[in-house]
Length: 252
Image (cartoon, rainbow, N blue to C red; front, side, top):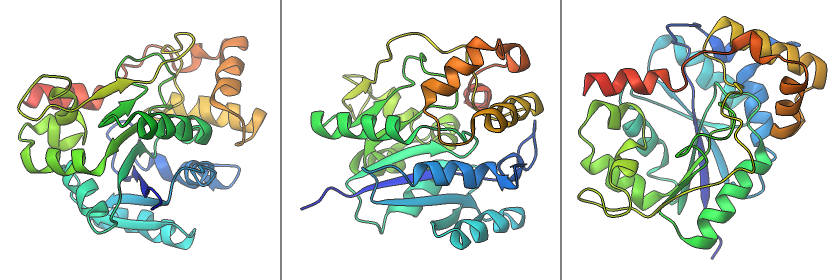
């Protein structure tokens, strides 16, 4: 029987630093559509679901995803773990891939490689961001649906509900009540100082610049090398990585 792998990308219009960011356009195409069109090239993904919120402002995200030929679902704005579980529970998926839609240039080949690695080694959870060496904006998490279901049942902390996978990480490799096997997918060099995610206006300026110069079909490494070679880190350097997660930890 074929392995069913469902990729879920979380998307919403609300953002304190850059409202409506995933709907901002470059060359007449929104960042969300660019993100989805790239992910459509994944060969290891059975289905892509855009998981947005029940807020009225996010109806446009749901409608656009359907219009572009993707599946979509709506759920809790704050309990993103529940949003993921509700989006996937009827899919009979073996594996879930979690990405975020504020990463328009996420590399489909990288996604496929991490999926293949996780499935061939049967880890409960594999990510290239446990140790942050890939550019911010190329983060991929692959985990068994059974791990998501366990997290959904048992996660209590605010940070574990708002960010989907912290419960799995907090109960990894002998830690906690439900121990998951995890692995960090490695990189040949440390590119953690590169930002290809969109959290602030200057992030958008960088993404717009490199899309206008290189288009939307390059690999993560080609974009990275272009940013380095042209000293573009000056456009959006110094922004704190995973700031939203750090705020959630404070609420715990």
